Amino acid sequence: SQSELDYPFKLLEYFNGFRISKAIFSACELGVFDLLLQSQKPMSAVEVAQKLGTSEDGVERLLDVLVAIEIVDVEVVQGTAFYSSTDVANQYLAKTSPKSLHDLIIYNSQTIYPLWNNLVDAVREGKNQNEKTFGLPSEEIFSAIYRSEEEMLKFMGLMNSTWVIDGHDIVTAFDLSNFKTVIDLGGCSGALARELAKEYPSSTVTVLDLPAVVQTAQRHFAQQDDTICFQEGDFFEGEIPPADLYILARIIHDWKEDKNLKLLKKIHAACPPGGGVLIAEALLFENRRGPTMVQMFSLNMLVQTEGKEHPPSHYTHLLTDAGFRDVQVCRTGKSYDAILALK
Ligand code: SAM
Image 1 (tube, helix red, strand yellow):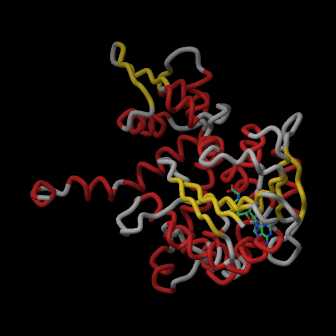
Image 2 (cartoon, helix red, strand yellow):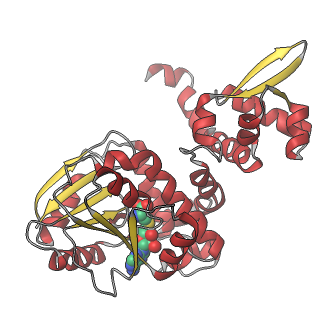
Image 3 (cartoon, protein in one colour):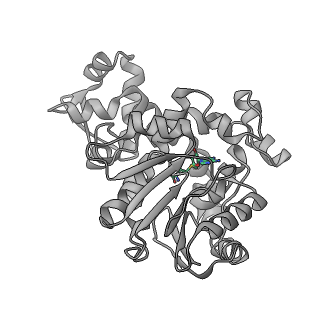
């Protein structure tokens, strides 16, 4: 627009985007939001620095940035600034909140950010940057993602935190009450499966994932009176156990086209007539004009995996090619959308 030509407000804001991300990530890693939540009263930068073991100057500048982007509040009393948390920070940035996005932030800061440092090479080569970034072979995407126990935990934390805020919309996008046995293929920590079990208490919900992932899920993400079961397996190499409904949440976007078709055909063969498959992914618009976040996810898939994000028509073709029918698409308006198809 003309005003952008007169002065590039929007461009300059975009250039600054990485600084904003890093300021929030760093505050999370330092424990700023946890401290402000626990504190009964507003804190000066000196107090925050003492509690967190940081420099006063550094933490004061960081807090001021967080104030400017409206994540922290400030009041100046007789020349001293006193900082306090906001409701948004308490709910989403503090580690202890039930809706905490802390794990999502840690993964973005420590794993995604270094990968995006090699975005130029990813675009040039058209492949992921696991080798350059972490010294791991680019074909084995989950060997790279799970390169250590710590990384596996971090990744599972990332996956888990999404469904705390988006899971309910996915499991209620369609009425799934007729599906009595459900298997979440590649269900990771079990967060989406738990949402499903909560919404449909008469259904039996099982998470199938790689053995090491299932073991870590049971050790670190199990809940008292857990409503779901776990099963170790491999959806490419092993058998797909029988079920009325299969969930594929953020699975298709990891892999190349031929692997996805093979997987869906295998699911179709295991599925009884009237059974179905529920896909949860972030959907692109057919006209290629967004959503920005999903286009960003797709670029992220380039940098980290062998897959990409797609518009609904792609999933409809894929599901139809695999033998499914009655494909229904539900855009939730949040980060992730749902697609249901029947056999
Ligand atoms: N569905 C989960 C979610 O949306 O939060 C996790 C998605 S994550 C991008 C992909 C999942 O697929 C991981 O949990 C991974 O361990 C699992 N996975 C990868 N290869 C697999 C295989 N061959 N068999 C079973 N699970 C696999």
